[in-house]
Length: 87
Length: 458
Image (cartoon, rainbow over all chains, first blue to last red; front, side, top):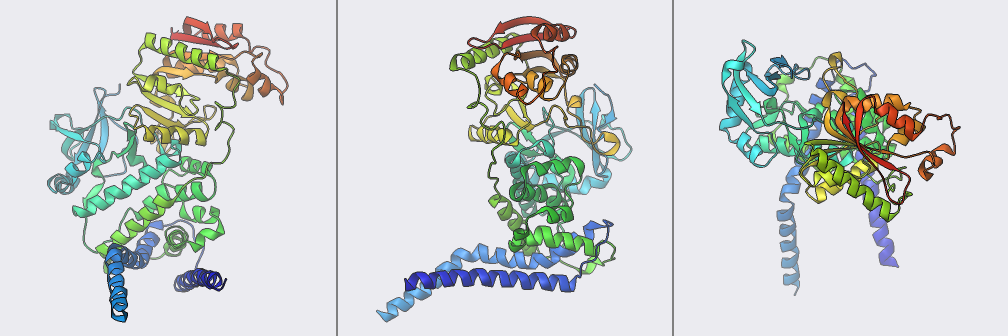
């Protein structure tokens, strides 16, 4: 029971944490670029600037994704070393 | 066929244009594109894409048929037998078209090039698979430059796909109104609120729309702003992951279970198949349009014999099922497309000529109109003379089924309508169609009241 409760808490926390990051991200974006309702004059510039902004984040995520296998192996090796040491 | 005439859809790109000469299609490459074209060929990108069947192949031909002073080269691209448009594709067709576009962009970056435009109209279906048809869409990639076609990709592919997936599959019809893709502020306002909590959708649609609005009237010095290759790869990877995960849960529509919900007996069904086989063997067509094809059961009678078959239906689920089946079986000769015959694809764009109407893409050698006429005549109040006139415009021969008023399916259509169709009779049907066609054969389908006709245009 306790384990199930803890697992649920962990899941909820993860979801909550994810939402908080998104809300902060949105708020920051809206703060930096306050919304003004203009007609379509030049939608190209907005797309251009947005790419620079989100490209950094996606680039970072992409790097993690590319090296995810290596990262996993790295952490596994640390934990297995610890276990060996404990033994 | 027109001679030495530019194709109306080919005018935006200064790199070149398509034109007809002696019934064949050629592409002129202008001097302005020389450097990029040479790089496309020399870098090996062209070969790599053609080998992978991602890009249409072409042959360089003699420069004599050039019709402009700007000419650098004339190429003759491989011919696409039937041009279709994104508002005629089902969900999975648009998804496959989007994914192939991203695949091409990723491949282009490997070879030091990038797509300068990402119009969904640059994708066509050839032998069952999507293929990129605009050879002049590649430009040299300059380090630290963002993707110029990002906006167009989001408007042409991402916005319709997410709207179809999260809201309603029929929203792909917005592409018929917005020729340069669905405006992102419109997509953002139509999408459910919870899509704002999905990071990739928040970025590519919602914040993208806000950013477009914010910078619409602002002058930004873009030369000082840079985007690394890693960021660009990350952006493309994010789009690919997002689109790969998009799916469409089929809703129940009126036609999806048509074959399970029919008044046909097995005997009638098999006899109808046999008659269609016999009739089509007599005609031996090269191109068949099966109108009201549902999931393509009768289309496959001819497509499996190597005959190019366009399998039209009004129902998005039927077209989706048909397409998924063709992909699963790796069928080469069937192209399922969405079409409402009572309001078929019109000519759209500049001077209504950029994208062809369905009539302009005909006539087909043979049209199948099976279990269709009663829907047109009774559900849509179309007089038989108008139906006959229409079919005479789109085909040379016709395999058509007449479903009499006494048939239970017609009775079903009449349950909620007043019977204002005194002329809906076999006699009127034959006399109206007889004005345009000669009836070469007619047979009653066994174990039913339906009659199948083979007609040849007069």
